[in-house]
Length: 313
Image 1 (spheres, rainbow, N blue to C red):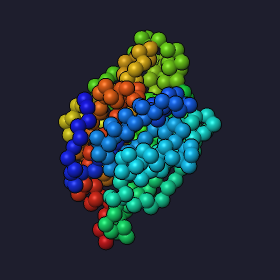
Image 2 (cartoon, helix red, strand yellow; image 1 turned 45 degrees about the horizontal axis):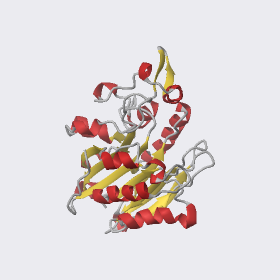
Image 3 (cartoon, rainbow, N blue to C red; image 1 turned 180 degrees about the vertical axis):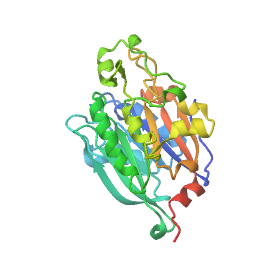
Image 4 (cartoon, rainbow, N blue to C red; image 1 turned 60 degrees about the vertical axis):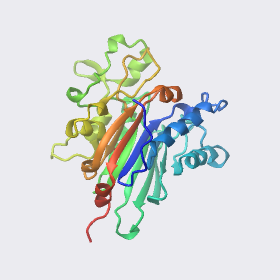
């Protein structure tokens, strides 16, 4: 499925989540930037209002010039979290400055892996009367389930205290509602990469199983009946009847890690869920040339979105 350049529609808000492998560069060292420019073309065709980006490799160099080049290419403002000695692949968020104003900017660090990029925006038009919108781009740890659980619990704080938030990223783990999924959990007997098995499984009472804990932390119904986040793919499939919302997102290239899985996901706080119009997964040839991850687009009704962010006086 390929993203089709939509008309300039003032009635929607489009949020894109994409892990652009090594920022479209040749490894971590730069070099050929052709894939990076192709990534910009793909994103520009989506006409996003918000982009949640992972693997902004080397975008901190030269005064963050690569980050601002991407923002200019998309007509968006851009912020990013720092890289770390353990991983030079930071997360970032881009947003439409005609629609949103930057209210605050936070970075959340957990265990030295990818810091979470967390800008807080307000809708333009009536800043004083508008409830802030917290955004987060995250890239959960690729190798340690315990770290992923810690990172997920850190993200929980962004959806608590009656905050309104949209978060998304590469979860490196699996949905917890297996009965609703179109893509089964990995068959670990068919995974040829032993490191992948160690990185993506957890101990269970009946042996080793797929790590679904981050999704459970973020999106399960708690004993008291409440939820912190709504997982948008699951919501679009079960509430809006959109089966394509549950398509696999990665890996688009590797064959030694079993079947593709739905590891790239977006979430919102329950107050925003009724505004969701669609959740789409795109993985055409251009996207696969740029990255090993599919591109995910959530489209919200702008009027309903604004209503949530404009509390009654």
